[in-house]
Each structure stands twice: as C-alpha cells, then as structure tokens.
Length: 129
Image 1: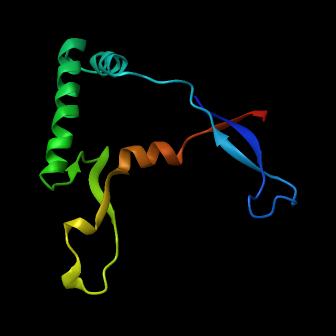
Image 2: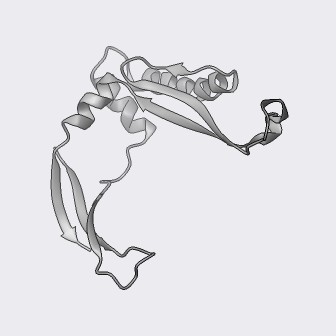
C-alpha cells in the first residue's frame, strides 16, 4: 500500500509577483472509525469485536483523565500523549502565574512502532492541482 500525494502550486504571500513553487500534499483516503479499528484488532486477537471496542472506548475516556492529572500517557511502542502550553511572558519568574497560560494542547510523540511505519511509507504521485 502507498500514501497518495498531489502537487499543489503556492505563491509566497510576501512576494506575490514571484512565480509559484510546487509542493507535495498528502491525500487522505478517508477515515477509519472505532468500529473499524475494533474489527481489525479482533481479527488479530482472541477477543471479539465488542470486547475490543469496549477497551478502546475505555482508553478514550481514561487518556484525558490521566492528562488532567498532570501525567504523560505512555503507550510504549505506540507513542505517548502529553500536555504542552503557550503562555504570555513576564519580566520576572515570580510574576509568572497560571493566568499567564493562554492555551493548553495535547501533543502526541510516536513511539518506535509508528516511527518505523512512517520511515517506510511508500508515496504515489496523484494529480497536479
């Protein structure tokens, strides 16, 4: 299997008079939902699809709770989820409070299993847009 990409022309917004440059953009083939994942996992295990889906639903509920408790969620070779934030600066360390935090985000860092897949992806060119 391969990941399809298209070629897209983009102009530099700071130099509109320049010729466009061409970039590769990846195409999604669609989405796979929780039911699909449960079915695929059930095919590779001794569990049935309903049991797998229940475990996945539990994982979806527990990950935000663990992050909210201030922990990193380490899914070992799959990867980990952790919180990051952006904040407003202060002149001194003493002036920094929780009010400085503008926004929290969740970051996913892939583990070895996912990194290995990403490093070996085959790409197939689609159309020029």
